[in-house]
Amino acid sequence: MYPASFQVFIPASLEEALELLAKYGEEAKVLAGGHSLIPLMRLRLAKPKYVIYLGKVPGLSYIREENGTIRIGAMTTHGEIAASSLLKARNPLLSETASRIGDLQVRNMGTIGGSIAHADPAADYPAALQALEAQLVVRSVEGERVVGIDDFILGPYLTDLQPNELIVEVRVPSLTGAFGTAYEKLNFRAGDFAIVGVAALVQLSPDGSKFEKVRVGLTGVSDKPVRARGVEEALEGAEAGEEAIAEAAEKAKEGLNPPSDIRASSEYRLEMTVALTRRALEKALARARDKVA
Ligand SMILES: Cc1cc2nc3c(=O)[nH]c(=O)nc-3n(C[C@H](O)[C@H](O)[C@H](O)COP(=O)(O)OP(=O)(O)OC[C@H]3O[C@@H](n4cnc5c(N)ncnc54)[C@H](O)[C@@H]3O)c2cc1C
Image 1 (spheres, rainbow, N blue to C red):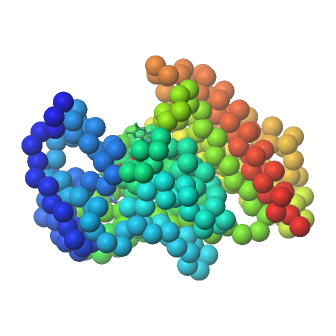
Image 2: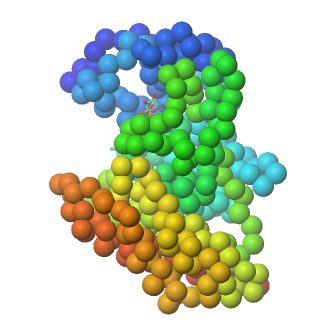
């Protein structure tokens, strides 16, 4: 189908983009990679009167490290995140997650800002961003605010973003010491969205004997990405090992009531949540152990 008619703006600066949003916000949509917005417009599920294309706004695509934080511009593509040597060294969870999104074309066009703003409950990044306790920098003509991922995604396709606001940056920690991470995704065909996705971060004590910090983020199992806090609490301070992981992983399904749909039943999603949590944590543990001197 063809989209309803709309007017396109191509701002040449962030200030211009923000002014356009301030003027047309309620009736406008920003266009990043277009891999979610364009299909919605073609189905006429989205009918913006104005489309503000971000592709010519300079300074929104970067990955850099500053004072223990990695800052990623909102227009950075999934492909750039997957290939980044900085992320592979300092935050491999994000690059591994990006490498599992869609196919090459989706990764070449789709952006991290677009994915987060779209808030698809089966999207991959949000699991990793939950595990990393990521922060988002949001701008409008009125100024800037920083919001945690947990407070930003409110429900399916629903965020805390106001009509006059843009996501400009994503902040994740630069990981050091005996850490290991892993992203496990269940999908039946390569390139599909996750039926269940689990992101795990494990930080070991310097001698490798204990779990110092554990974070687990889940996607596809709720109306928004969630942390498996029961698993985290069960493991933190425990002897680092596969037995503890097997026991704790059972807690991943606590409090969840995943949707049933054409791809998987709720019960299946619950069982896979436990299985993938265990697998992701085992992988993360093995990777952390490699870093213990
Ligand atoms: C065939 C196919 C397979 C896919 N598979 C996967 C998958 O396996 N896993 C996965 O996670 N995703 C998948 N996707 C989605 C893909 O990751 C999209 O690229 C992403 O969801 C949206 O990013 P975008 O840059 O294309 O955003 P757009 O489509 O341009 O925009 C999406 C929404 O975000 C808003 N927006 C965009 N940028 C900003 C910003 N900086 N600030 C505020 N609002 C903004 C737009 O107004 C719009 O509402 C797939 C998409 C396709 C077409």
